[in-house]
Image 1 (cartoon, rainbow, N blue to C red):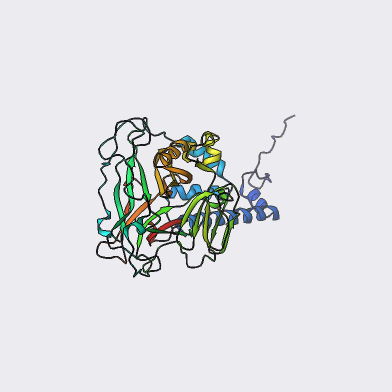
Image 2: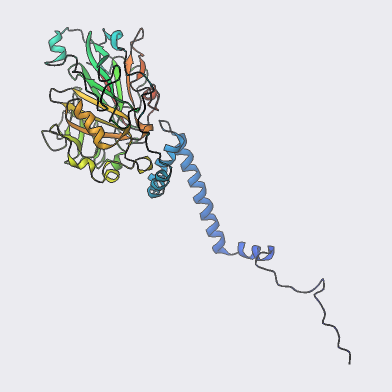
Length: 414
């Protein structure tokens, strides 16, 4: 008997669709759960794109990489950023010579008649030179180089600004240690008898608030008498303290935290909040806290070597030797600012101590946030020309003539 052949699948055969075929995809898309997940995913991606774009286009300093890193840390991706930076970190090179001359020219000769305050008011009374400078406020002593034999100009103080013809700000350069000899730190010494210090908020940190007349920039009309500016500290949320300005607070002012305290008369004190009379009074205009002090009673405490990344900031690549800045006060009251590349916390503290600080604190870290500028009035005292102290800093000298995303300090002639 001949068996009939088994019929094969003809054109009309009902063959189930495979999982990758259009019919299955249409069924999947028709399910309510799929639609909900897709909508949530689209909303998330849209919000992320908007948030990142907002972070990249906000006014203020910072490269694309820095802004992306800041955005990621603000959105709970800090460990990812830290790991990525650790992989990409390149330690500073050993040896070599500086890329620029340390024989700093005197740039403050044109400010001999500088006078006035941040509000543009002029002082019409005359004071004696002794009244202006205070005791012991002549040219600071030359600094010895931590790198050993100094190169030309290293450690020599030059006049950066004058008030009523009297030197008010001096500056110098030092190589930070005997290993990283091609790197240079900038140091400024400021006479508080001749200067007024004003705290400014950043547009992103501490952000919008009722800060009174303080703005995140120094607009035209508020530049007469401006002599210097410098960067603030960590983001307030990472500072272990708070930020106070003209009656408004971000974070919480914490006892035991290193603090810059700004007074309504223009004075600036540096110390530990809750100690030595540093507390909230009606005379206080602003407080900027940041971590623990790095110089205490003229000595560098052992704490600067402990848990460096945890205690002293998540540095680029998790490296200890990065751009850092700090501020302190000497026994006779000078205000000292130090910043530069290839610094660990101990080296920064040692430079502040070498410049005479008896109390000092770290400010911000990483290259995009570093800046110290002086302002030369030349023939336009109402619109002085900014000049970077360190030619290697990333931020342009005009940084604070535009809106800044981080807080900063402006220094005016009294």
